[in-house]
Amino acid sequence: MSDRYAVFGNPIAHTLSPRIHAAFAAQTGQALTYEALLAPLGGFPEAVAAFSRAGGQGANVTVPFKEEAHALCDHLSPRAEAAGAVNTLKFAGDAIFGDNTDGVGLVNDLTGRLDLEGKRILLLGAGGAARGVVLPLLQQRPAELFIVNRTAARAEELAARFATPGVMRGGGYEALEGRRFDLVINATAASLSGDLPPLPAGVFAPGAQAYEMMYGRDTPFLAFARGEGAHGSDGLGMLVEQAAEAFFLWRGVRPKTAPVMAMLRAC
Ligand code: ATR
Image 1: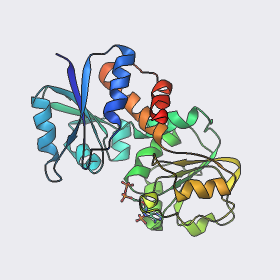
Image 2 (image 1 turned 180 degrees about the vertical axis):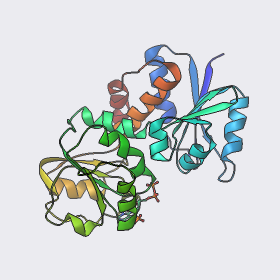
Image 3 (image 1 turned 90 degrees about the vertical axis):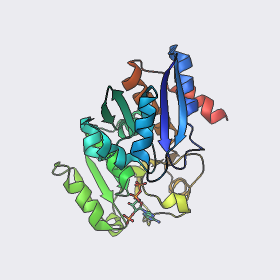
């Protein structure tokens, strides 16, 4: 029998993860199944326990359960601890190990095109999506990581958690006036409602990159970035890269991501 994996979320119907993991399994010759499972909003721990009892080996976790997954784990990787959220579970007997591959997924996608060392990075948002990527971004040794948020205090709090004097700062959007960045990452939920975070003109340095964590559609952020002369990309690469890192944690084999990206872009 094949080893079983799954992704838990609510909603979960539109997830691309089963297709991504099926492609990784075929490419690496691993015998496994990967399914999408809808967990009830009040019943995430029970759904995970039932899957583990039924022979599940591991799982991914998506919205809105990443914080609950963090609380559920017996052991955590340092990056999951720093993120305060877990997107990958690995079952070992009765114990659950939790990891967070979102941040490294973003970094792996970005570093395919851009060396982050010495760069000025602007991170928009201070919620779960932003928190998950701070540590892996800092590990790339940028010259600056500036977090801005609509509610400035949340950005200041998030920046203060990481002791990196001179590199990291948090604040509100008004602090961006007259500042320029080499990379601007949108980790806000603004795109979900078709909104643009209140970015001033001139925030992109010449040749800058804009990264939208959402994928699958053009957003006001990407349109704004293009208008300002920046190169934009959506979060499909991050999705595939975080999946590859989870696959590696479970199977000890690192799949190639480029063919899977090409397959998804072609659909
Ligand atoms: P997630 O886990 O997806 O990050 P979240 O924790 O609810 O979700 O955080 C959403 C983020 O998007 C927050 O940083 C939020 O800003 P506030 O903390 O000020 O609420 C940000 N956000 C949502 N809508 C926004 C908008 N229209 N413009 C700018 N930021 C927005």
